[in-house]
Length: 581
Image 1 (cartoon, rainbow, N blue to C red):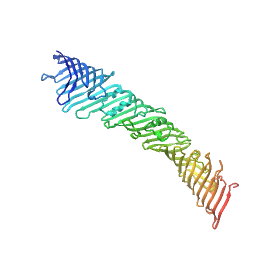
Image 2: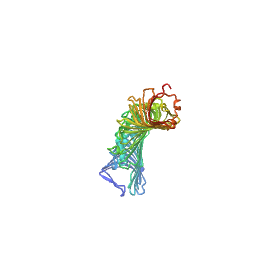
Image 3: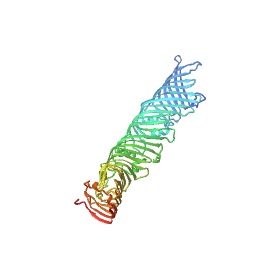
Image 4: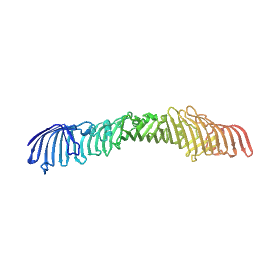
């Protein structure tokens, strides 16, 4: 028996409880072999608003207790298939060829899809699943697999209604590449929200994670959409920074915690490895502009940087820095710089960098012009051109010389620890404050008969300006019975020129004002005692005199000298030298 059906516009309604499925035209040419309960469809054509298909098929009828089959098993070969049911996709999907095995159950109405193989742009898509009509409407479960496809095509196959903002972000920012081992699942139930999952691997990808940032090239990794959470992992990838070369992004992750939120919030955890210049160049791109805000150049230092940067931002246009939350944690390795502290060579095996919306900081230990340090540099957000350094330094004569803090020859020897604070203001000399407990440092002023052994502690507080020359605006010293405060004058070349101490106390036997005047290299300074009083009954010069250190000329103008019990001299004046012993 043979028959042909050519039907105009109409609709199919599996039962009264579901909406009809409209069609514009349907044509079927078939033959029936009753002995085998077999239908042969030599032509099938369906034209509808949501689906257009053509092909041929064979079907075997099962069950006919009431003279009408309960189900049929169908093998269908598709010559053409295109469709977009309920506007599920951005544009109708078109396939050139396909094979389908399914079972159609009429009581109750349902379709079990054993396998549907569609050929998309020369690549096979395989689907399986089931659709049936429940009490409240359609219940659909479909699983899909695809061996490989262009990454852009993957986005086209992504239903519009599922994680729409995430899909849109991928559509704009997944620029090239190939997806493979892709698998998806769709679950529909009348009256409930659709459930969609998707997993895939990718390679040779180009991805733009922010419009202002360089594109990630040669990306490879995987993506997963599951339970409204989307994750994209770059197991491998690089960016070409505006300066400094390539940065590796291996292990970086993009995550949208809840794709239902509008706008969707993306979290990027970027693991970076590259040159310091390249890393700083990347961090200086809008909207972060870390180096621009710090008032520092990109080529600040040589070395490598390894770090993690977290960006949290909404998926919408017109982003500003106020919309982006960020946190940077990095290590600067084998750092060398002549620019971080102008005029000084800085070297460090490892420095830690942190940056967020509150500011930026660099901390760690290293060597600055031969002097060791362990400090932290900080700049608060919004404080453009203003920053501060605080920490410890290895305090020694070489440190003082490196920073132009010249003291008289022989006055300072040994090494110890000091605490330093620097105030950095763009366009202005750097102000400093240096304090120390003086452990490990020996000090001596032979002309005053004063010395502090390295084992003794004390207190040193120095402040002024670093530069060419440096200045010592305030100096306070309290150690081994000596207490003084005043300032030090340096020549334009940075050599010791003099010092003025309005308040000096030595061992309980002298209180007054002292002025030191430099006499050139390798010469002890001249000492002028300009006022005060002395009690010679309490003085002991033996320790200083045994040191063998030379002293410069001494000029004394004292209000009073106590020579012995009952003998005092007033308005005493005198000039002394150590020449001839």
